[in-house]
Image 1 (tube, helix red, strand yellow):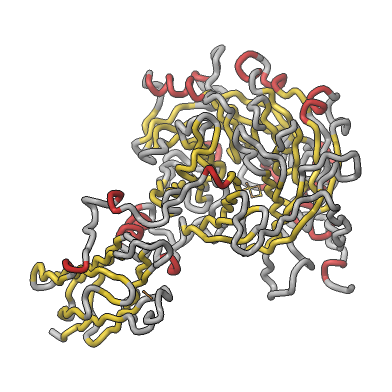
Image 2 (cartoon, rainbow, N blue to C red):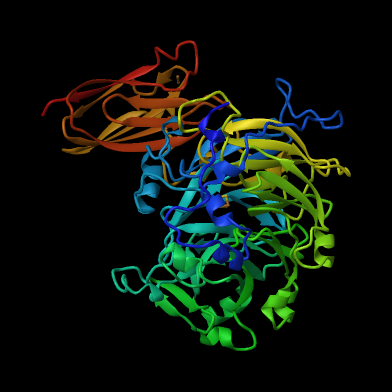
Length: 629
Ligand code: CUK
Ligand code: CUA
């Protein structure tokens, strides 16, 4: 056709005054940097030529049947988590995290509103990296954690209720990007601040970029309190941990500590940071830190006292320029650092982090995988799958062969498959735990271009399902593209667990809020006037009535409405909507919510239920009568 896609796009990166020799020097293929910016030119107009063969299991799930796996997607700057069933890829629900969300009443009741306000009061977040809690290296189904890149926060989702129950606004950071729990027992939640800022960022040193720092943060996953931080050289990026509770390994860029792109890409090396968690803990216990905004900050810069001895607290491992991600394979033996600007993956031997005095020698393999490697995932057979952003492909490779082959060799490559288009994260079932399954893989493509009906100039992403259960000696190594799935902008990452690992409640357990909120029974629905301007109203709700048929307040009263859904049956949800008062509660069975507002508009306000709950749903009504003063 003659669409804009087919027209050549300049390979120059606007504003980047680098010449081609600089790219080469940076260990990148010619034009790689500009291709990352103007990638549309390199994806081709390719159509899907791979078809599925007979030995791929049916990914569709029959009516009434369940999926095998839970998938937890980050929503990117939508700020939420989305739950998909795999392999059908049906979206099951969304969990609002950093975003207020009316369908679930999140941010509308007093408790969730206060949580969002206490966490900074921002109206949005940018969730990238979901991480499931583990016990003994296996997903335990208790919690999911996720970062907010935009506002430097981390949040916890309680998987009993599939609801966000804590958000921590991390001090001393800007742009929390890398975020993951510490394997194997979730002793810490770790978070990387990507952007370098003065420490503290209170107006000092704004014009002294050499004083900006990036910090690694350890958070207690139960209290969600920040325990300690480590400041380092360069910009921290994405991270993963080993499987033994010792090392947290972060990708990093801008070792030059520049503030403009030319400065950030001047040298030919960057340094992955491997944090020795027990050693940092010891330094904190010994008081070897500076307290900043109430947090002990340990100095992990390359030339610091704690790093200059024989047992540095942070190891600086040289890699090609500007790597993207770190992923540790399920055995915990190797950490894979995808090269991004370099067409390689650097393989770090985790055991060598403690024993090898020369950090460069902890890299035991560097297979050449293709252009723009961003993320790597794993099956249960010692094979890795890396997304190639520029090549718009997934490459399958053999880990031990890559370790045994000379650097930059292609010996380990088992096959490549085209994806559509420009993949970011890639994830196989349970690949982040010690129990990978090795059947399905999802590749999260940043562009969908021609794959779906056009929906205006902001396109959906395209998450593609690939079957990896058949190892074959063919062009793709047996990988088969099975399905395209449009997704609302803009998931970055996903994590998948077998369905037996996740056990959500069907109704609320009122013991979980006893002492904090009153369970309002039908007979205890009432209105209490506390003083001249304060009213508390308590109402039960069931099909098809509220415990209060009406209640009267005076203009200007502060009203706190407490409502309990007294239903015992699963899936019978009721709502409390008050027109013109911006009140919107959603109540699962046995749940109680409170909302406080000022009744500043006299008149009659019909309270109605937002969830269609019975044949008399429309008649299910109450009235708030606001009398003029
Ligand atoms: S980052 Cu987005 S594609 Cu935030 Cu995990 Cu790599
Ligand atoms: Cu309750 Cu509709």
